[in-house]
Length: 337
Ligand SMILES: NC(=O)c1ccc[n+]([C@@H]2O[C@H](COP(=O)([O-])OP(=O)(O)OC[C@H]3O[C@@H](n4cnc5c(N)ncnc54)[C@H](O)[C@@H]3O)[C@@H](O)[C@H]2O)c1
Image 1 (cartoon, rainbow, N blue to C red):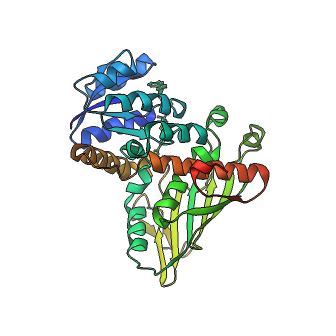
Image 2: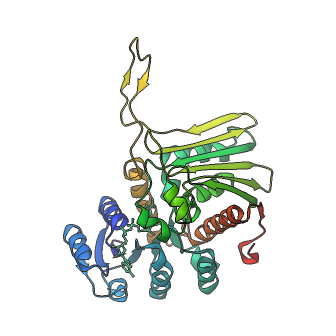
Image 3: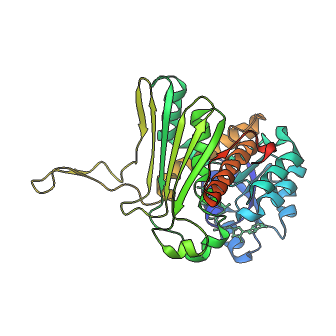
């Protein structure tokens, strides 16, 4: 499998196009309604610009499809992509709302949904993956507490806030998926708190910029997720898993191994990484390699549209919890809230 039909020519499409080339495949066709963006990316990737998504997906030079478009277009494009029968990778989130995601999985069926790769790239981060493997291998005994910290260096432009879907669906969605992948148990309750202490304007636009969510798994494991839209010292991404026999930590990588020791400053490390492109760059490439390998061998995708539905279900529960000031109890996505 070598030729990819790429939907979208924005920021993530450019990242994926570079990873596709690194993985030894190539972008065969591109579609983006912003023609200039499509042409610019096609020129660097050596791809053919198409006049519609259907044309790009249907081209015989494309054996697989990647959707890296704005979140509100994912389900429409996914339905079109499913009809081609080709392997699909779609960026997170699966849909722009829980109802839309649930409707999509119900329409295509769970088996087909498990064959769609969902872009939760952090699963492929080496530090986070090592932590997950250590927990699964029982290195810390029974997992009791999981703490995920995820803070952006600075907030997005204010005009992005109303169309982001809110912090839980837009930003914390990665952490919900990460929590599920590490804990491996059903989540039975979600309690959220949120405020807009970074920028009150974000609050006036109906969102929060600072949030914590506590979730209880069915075996008693407690998961805490902390998010902020601002961190004075860089992109703060850490996971701590605490168990009966000890603790494992996936810490912030540093920009370099440089450290300073002087009388005034008895030990300063190089700064942490600036934002997601630097921090998670290698994970995007690993994700694309995994997709291509699974698609070539006809395997089920290791992170898929069912995971996408579960993450957006937790995001919805957190949104309801914050709005209604209560703990939301969960059974199954089919049952709603
Ligand atoms: N995994 C990650 O770490 C990560 C990081 C950032 C963004 N994302 C996700 O990636 C997706 C794209 O985000 P982005 O930052 O690249 O946005 P972007 O705005 O830079 O690019 C989106 C592109 O999609 C195009 N587009 C819109 N409708 C289309 C359609 N029907 N067909 C084809 N193209 C269409 C737009 O014209 C635009 O060029 C979003 O769903 C976002 O949530 C994921």
